[in-house]
Length: 378
Ligand code: PMP
Ligand code: GLN
Image (spheres, protein in one colour):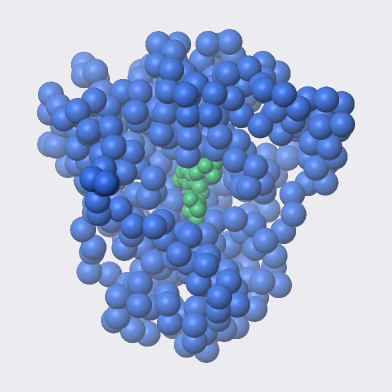
């Protein structure tokens, strides 16, 4: 077989979770909670299974869920999306990213991707015949260098992929970033994919800035989110894409032949729970406490912690401990010290000279304290 993606490796998330299981290390690698979701949500799923919501959902998703998403976006970001034609429920944000990227990118099109990037973006761009153009974000703040974006844009640029709050760095976009982006794409036909799966996990009283908030950006953007992060249910794999009608129309052509439709009883459960605003509104406080607990537990360690403004990931610099590669370092961390983390190098096209790794703090307090104790001994 002639591989379509010859250089692609198994995802680092799969590799590290397997290593954590093999070594029985505390798993702060792949991003998922080690606590259960809201029992109400479980009851709702049971309820809908028992009452017979067990057949195919409509291709774009059940209408009450699309309506609830539309109300949520209008309430939080002041943008109007028609639930009938502009919101599509997907099998996680992963499917939404795939459908959005493949619905616009054609052979030879250039796509701007910021590094470090969430690992799903470049393979989908390449698979579509697109050419990624990487722009590096630098520690400690990982801000977007807009002048570089402006310089790299050409007639070939078809798409820019934005991710805020940002995985793996925890950086978030500020108002001036949205303004700069709008200025740069003005007068072009560039599309935007905005990966906002951590939209409800933003700290220190900051507000998430969705691209939906900015009318000129909203018109050209696929806004993507995931219920997995918001409701501690990463294994249920349900997300969505909100995009103007013309974009959603093309998006659905792809979506209908990836999955056709998504898990029915889970959609009904989310439709109910999404109307309880307090659940997602209390998420920043919930995770901020965990971030602060983990940072405190690491105070006496030899790691330097970078700022974390959103997501449930903490990036740490281990240069005081070792100068070995991040992949070597995380392997040792799991096997010898009993904590699994994610190296940052798989999130780059070309490996940078740095010693950064990512810890997930979506864990029980006791897990974070125990991990902190182990990490302080290194
Ligand atoms: N985008 C980002 C930035 C993510 O971190 C993740 C998963 N953690 C996804 C997309 C995929 O989300 P899902 O699990 O809903 O497919
Ligand atoms: N997004 C999750 C993370 O960043 C992992 C998802 C996956 O395993 N593909 O850890």
